[in-house]
Image (cartoon, rainbow, N blue to C red):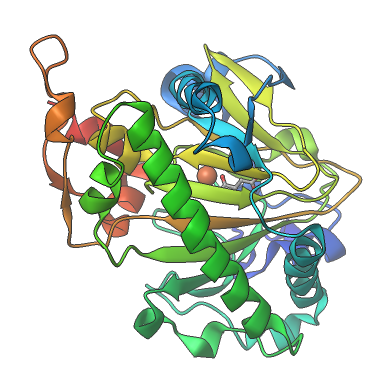
Length: 352
Ligand SMILES: O=C(O)CCC(=O)C(=O)O
Ligand SMILES: [Fe+2]
C-alpha cells in the first residue's frame, strides 16, 4: 500500500516535506489546510495583489531625514520594508543562498545527521508538532542558534557543503550590524535616544538563522508553506529566494504578496518590537504560499530578546494621550509556540 494512503498519517509527521513531495501522488491529511480554522478573522481574506512595500536605502538613513521618515511610515503602515544598499555584496548573498541550497540537495540520510531532537528547536526537520490537530506547514527547515556564540550547537551545523559554517558565521556578523542600524533608526525616527530599543533587548541580543525550504507542491491551493503568524522577535531579517515569490502580508484584511527585489533584505518587526514601541510599530501577520512549479528557499534571521529578559514599552512612549498598551513580560519562544500552534496570537495575552 502506498504509504501516503495509510488511514492515519502518523508517518507523514516524521517525514520531511522534500520526501513527501518527491515520492507521493497523494497529499497526506496532516498538510491539508483547514480554511475555517486558519486564523480567526483572517479566514475569508481574499487572494493576493502585490504589496507596494517601501524600499529603504540604508546608505541614506543617517544623513537623510526624509529617508528616516520613509522608514518610520513604512513600519507604521506595513510593519515591513525592503532594505537596499545595506552594504552586503550581491556575490556574498548568492553564496549564502548557495550553501542552503546545497544542503537541501543532499541525500535524505545525509541531512538526517542534523535532525532536530524532540523538544529542541535547533536542527533540521519539519514543523514541530505540538498538538494532534495541528496542520503541518509545507516546508523543511534548518534552524540554528547563531548568537550568543556559546549557545551554538555545532552538531546541527552542516559540514557539507564544506564552507557552510564559515559563510553562515560571516553572514550573521553582518546581520548584527543590520540589526543595530534598524533598531537605532527606528528609535531616532520616534525622536528617542538611538539606543532606547537596543537597551530594552539587552546588549547580548540573540540571533537565530532559519533556512526555510519549500518544495514545489502539486496541490498548492490545499497547503500553506507557513500558516498565518506574526514573528515573536524584535525584528526578522529575511533573505528571499532570488526569483520565486511566496510571502504574503495581511494588510487591511487582504493578503498581499511581497515582491522579490534584487539584493534586498526584507525586514519586518515582530511582537517584541510592537511591545517596546507601545504599539506604534505593528508586528505584521504573514503567511507563505507554495507553487506547483518551483522550489523556494529563504533564510530568516530572527533577532529576539534573550528568553529570560523582561521587556515593556519604552517609558518615553507612554503619555496621557498614548497610555501603556502592553504589560512588562518575558516573551519566550516556548510561551509563543504554545499559543501560536493553536492558532492564536500570543501578543494578545500581553495587552493591558
Ligand atoms: O519564507 C518566507 O518567505 C517567510 C518565512 C517566515 O515567515 C518565517 O520563517 O517566520
Ligand atoms: Fe515569519
